[in-house]
Length: 81
Image 1 (tube, one colour):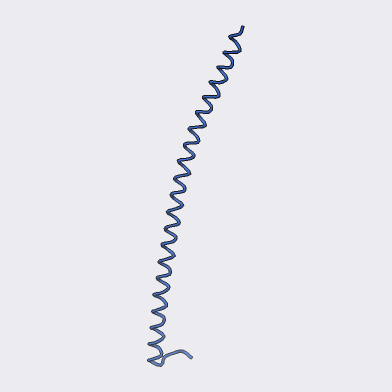
Image 2: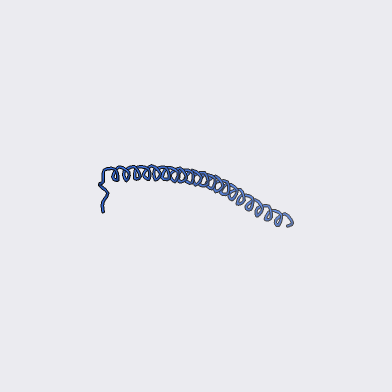
């Protein structure tokens, strides 16, 4: 009769162990997915920074072209009133 409770405890412990193994696998999967998302977010941030730098460069070029056009218009006396 003393073996029944021991067997019951072993059965319960094995079930817990099996459940924990499944949780460990799930946790590893979640960690891999989070790492992947973090990498992707870092790449997006870098790309956005590059776009901002490109936009700043384009704005600067447009400003220079605008200045040159204004100067040409003044020289030709075709500045709108």
